Length: 201
Image (tube, rainbow, N blue to C red):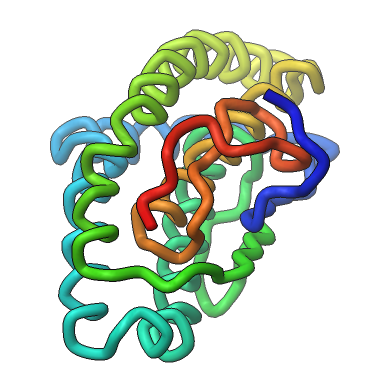
């Protein structure tokens, strides 16, 4: 459902003019490794709310957002950098303080231990949506990889779909980490979406 206010998590990345064929091979190797350890979202779905709950229990919600929020955001930015690389949004890997993805999180709310843990349940509908999108994204990845190997590029429409999936994932991770109070929208775009499920606070 579309509303009038923007969601407090935004993400953007610059599309390369050409993609490097060699990077496709590197991505394949990384995807094999990721496949062995499982998709990171599954681990983060459990880990982020638990870490947030522990930190909130030690410091309180406001201090968690103020003191730990920037560090958690940087970690999420690195994760999203890697995801953006893997799904063929960019040829840049994260490292040496460089972030190919510009992730901005306007921290909000006052999380409690209970609200942080309840996000394990509240996030399930969004996780299901992301799983469906990830399946489609995988098909697009194969098409894009073949096109990059042939022509060092692939259509912008497919690139924008991949960008939308990564935006969905970024919003969900920020929510799971209790950095934002609003439920992540069911949309590929970042802007002007209202909550789609109950807030956890």
